[in-house]
Image 1: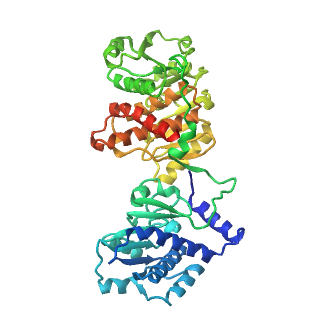
Image 2: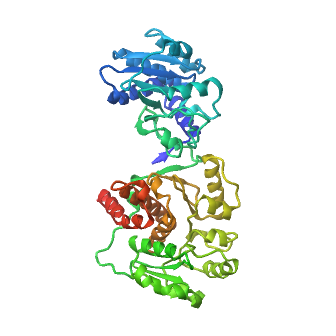
Image 3: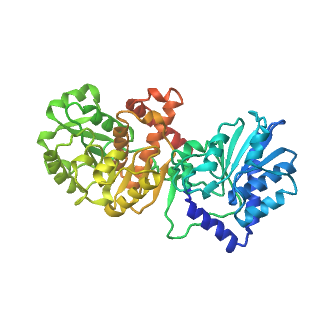
Amino acid sequence: MRLADSAQMRAMDQRAISELGIPSLVLMENAARSAFEAIQHFLELDSKIVVFLGGGNNGGDGYALARICKNHGWEVAAVRLVEPTSVDCQKMAEIYCHFGQILDYESFVAEAPEIGEQDIIIDAVLGTGGDRPLEGALAEQLTWINTLNGVKIALDLPSGVRASSGDVLGVAFRAEVTLALACPKLGHYLYPGRELRGGLVIKPISVPEYYAPEAQKYKLLNEEEILGLLKPLPKTTYKNQQGHLALLAGSKGMMGAAALAARSALRSGAGLATLAVPETEQASFTHEAPEVMTQPREKLTQKWFKPYGAVLAGCGLGREAKDWKKYSTWLKKLKAPLLLDADAFHGLKDLKGFDPQKLVLTPHQGEFLALSKNQAPKNNRERIEQGLSFVKQWGCTLILKGAPTLVFSAEGVVYVNETGNPGMATAGSGDVLAGLTAGLLTQGYDPLPASLLGVWLHGLAGDLYVEQAAEESLTAPDLIEFIGPAFAQLRSSRD
């Protein structure tokens, strides 16, 4: 599903008005009617509705919504935080005056109205128009509004959340439900905006989806996006046909990372997995992971990598510069797809010499900064810009782990993952993702489909675990155990 930033949403609105001939006031009325349809699910017989109004088009939507609520017999308080500034907002405010009184914020507070849990609080202050830090009276007002009782509903986007990044502009409305008008926005799915918007309901307003050819592509990585990527499993397949993954991973004290990656790869459907580990550590795998084959790392040569369908390097491998000088020489000569994780981003200086079309990177933010030489991003906007700049420079597929995880295609498309939960912030979670994704690579998936499937299934495995237990108790082996149920859910949906 495509996600829009604020500029793209403005362009779609403008196209509907200028090219399709839909008057802007009609779009505003459509937004209000769609919103009323949605909020009816939260109304009780004794509910009151309080609409807090801004001065732009989001405020205009709010004035129209307040009027429609009044017309349907509900008690409504229309509370102006900002004087109407846009032409359409001014018109809707003027129309509303024929149906009810507009209160300023000070008058509303002075009346000290009693607001109960059954009442509805509507945020129609900024919507997607907010892009500057909130301060002064408006910041104080939003802070106070957050303390009120009632069901809090945001029109389009909680005020104070940036539509293009989910960043908070100092202070933000905390909604229980957000009504996304026309289409979902990038800020609905990036934290902290994702948390502040509560539940998300997408409401049509007669604005057809349209993006200029040069517009940056943002996509939600959800089940709909994933379904077409999953390959059928042939009835007559056998282990060699399912691919053989080579893993250059593990070192003394860090063998768990290698085991997690190898076992995850096999849970992805890979037929075979062989770990190149220190000779002294080979025996541990007889009990740790008997299904995984091992190879003494001291005896490796370039020829050893030749038969494998894909290679994973980095999980618990260590950061010794002299070792990575040798590893990088081998890895740059590979013909097979390569996934780099963890210690690779500290051992390698850059990606010169690697085949970008066969390369997948899976760093967390700190590892990404070590490789890219960037400064820590101040917000989501910078995080996205850094990722886009990186794939433009190196032409590979980048999985930037975090909340949420982002996948950057070599063509510059940004996928925002929908699955996952805080319990996945646990030791070894990244090794499971690396093994799962590399296992898909060795089965013949191209780098981008393997990355999208790997990220989504990894998050879903965590979510399925949490359906049965607490986030706090989630461990990396739990993720591996729930990879199978994650695949089963996806195949069930597809079938």
